[in-house]
Length: 195
Image 1 (cartoon, rainbow, N blue to C red):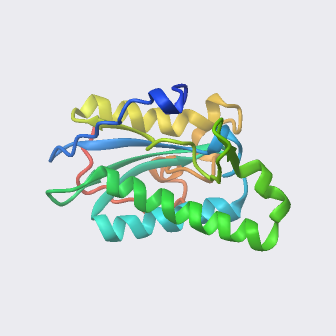
Image 2 (image 1 turned 45 degrees about the vertical axis):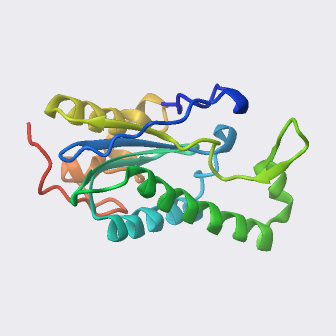
């Protein structure tokens, strides 16, 4: 699911409004710069996993579901403290991955920097791992919405024909739900509403 702001020119981009509503879960999407497959390698997926775990410790949320695709990732989380700041959670995850990736590329693969260069019409440029903008966030406040997003996340690799069954994809929580194996990120399902 693309970030709704991705198609807007920089000068006309709307300010993203986020709602920090107690009792709501959140469906977050992180898209790589220009939808490039920066998350196609285990190394970069590991950076995202580490960032999610660090953000969970810092911002106190339960992780209910996730998928890491080659050019984007989705997570469903539930903040466990009030007040919370979903923008701060986004920033913690995205900044950690971007800083690690850029430092790695500069040190070990400088020829790849061209893939990460965001040249602006005004002549300025910057190095990006993530797409411009804050990322996509949707509050989930009903049982049906939460499970619809979890099912969507788990079926994303199947829909893209990256695997035959959702629990075959190693980079999601689908196998945790089917009981086949534990995925690379531990889930916190105590507060998850059940079918």
